[in-house]
Image (cartoon, rainbow, N blue to C red; front, side, top):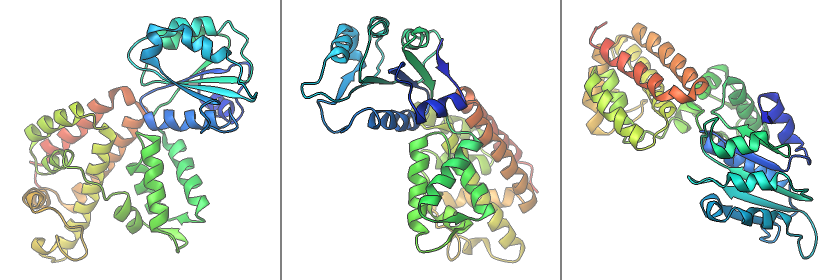
Amino acid sequence: MVALRGKEIDAFLSRPDPARPIILLYGPDAGLVRERAEALLASAVDDPSDPFSLVRLDGDELSAEPSRLIDEAMTVPLFGGRRAIRVRAGSRSFASGIDTLAEQNLKDCRIVIEAGELRPESPLRKACERARTAVAIGCYPDGERDLAKLIDDELRVSNLHIAPDARAALMALLGGDRQASRNELRKLTLYAHGGSEVTLDDVMAVVADASELKIDPIVDGAFAGKPDLVETEFAKAMIAGTYPGMIISAAQRQAAWLHKSALAVAEGTPVSTLFDSGFPRLHFSRKANVETALRNFSAARLVLVIEQLAAAALETRKQAAIAAAIAQRALLSIAVNAKRRG
């Protein structure tokens, strides 16, 4: 069985084994699957934009004619050179083509297969794990170490450092999808261009500036003490395909904003002025729920909520299979406890 894990994956990706030209990339992190596929293909051919060097196949079409994969892999380019095949797996199996291809002597041809989450008993995953000329690589949401490396790599390119509090906030906001995380980091580096250090204000201004309409009711309902609303809207978000970690990230941003607001109110700032200068502007439809949240939670209690959400964010990354249950439980807990004033 050839199913790579941990450091084995990094080693293989940095220097692919020519004896294992069939590579299956699968898992819930579609951005990471795509990023690794593109890197493997770029190193496999001289010109990825050349259709004679890089052939693209659809997995569902291959299921009707698995032999086509063998034909393409065994084809010798007219003008020589290396060749690669990119296969996007769908809902239909073409595992029989992998079984046959694994017995062939492939020369200068790499086959990269991209798939979503596959169970251990999936025919495609089983075919690649048992083949001596193939490897299967799971692509899961980044953990803390991976996120830290991603942040450092992106900031290093722009000669930027990051403040400790900004790093902590950024770690909580990223994860779930490698491509989305990298895009957010590139927006951040562009925003901070011209300076030397990324601050917490930079992070909250750029990475936190994406409150989606389908997420806002869940977060507002949690802090306003409306568990029924949380449950209903959370179910809608899951049907819409929203990643649970994104909802937790939105809740973390809201908790941080509420904490800052609660401190200001304690110092005498009227609640009505919080939605103007110095604080993020909210759509008028959200203000009533936010005012309720400020009445429900003191600054001290919000610190505990921030810690609770940080723990939930970490667990959603570590246990992707039950991320939805973890996120929903955390948000319902906040909603129920919001009724306890103080």
